[in-house]
Image 1 (cartoon, chains in turn blue, green):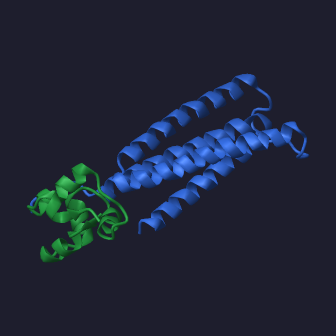
Image 2 (cartoon, helix red, strand yellow; image 1 turned 90 degrees about the vertical axis):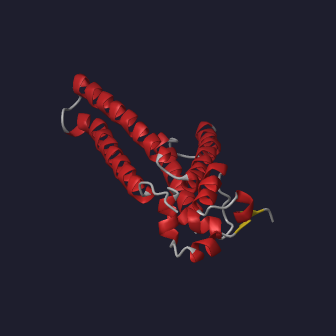
Image 3 (cartoon, chains in turn red, blue; image 1 turned 30 degrees about the horizontal axis):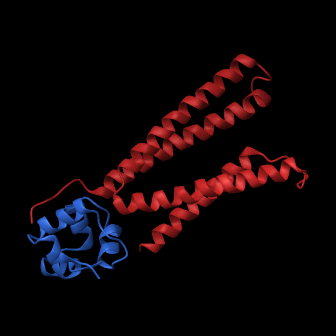
Length: 137
Length: 63
């Protein structure tokens, strides 16, 4: 009875904070690249391109932070994440293509925006994690 | 899969949190294993059995 390792909760907390910071930075750079040309630099292509590049690079950082977060989880937590991601990805493909078809056939009066799909993925993933966590409680 | 983790934990006066830290998983994972909601991987089962100085078969039984 002598095995002892670094508390999993401590590592998960550290990785979650790291991921939250990267996600927050990505959202801020996304907002800057989206609204900057309208509100800050009024159509300057160089600054718009630079803002998009920074947003892309921060996005790459966020992906690596997510991988690090997943690697730090234990096997049950990974299972919950995998199931949530599977549902989110599946729904994104099925609902995304159906939504696109609705737009192409003019069954909806507005344009099918990618942001709608991103919101759907986010909500589905979040719900998947919550349901998974409560299922194994 | 049934297991005797809860009994062994009580015998060794360990909380779920303490056992979780000893085998480097979350408390939720120990709880889910005890309740039979989640089957541990072979490496985790080995860690638990080594900790209690028992064989895997003595702790885990197929239902």
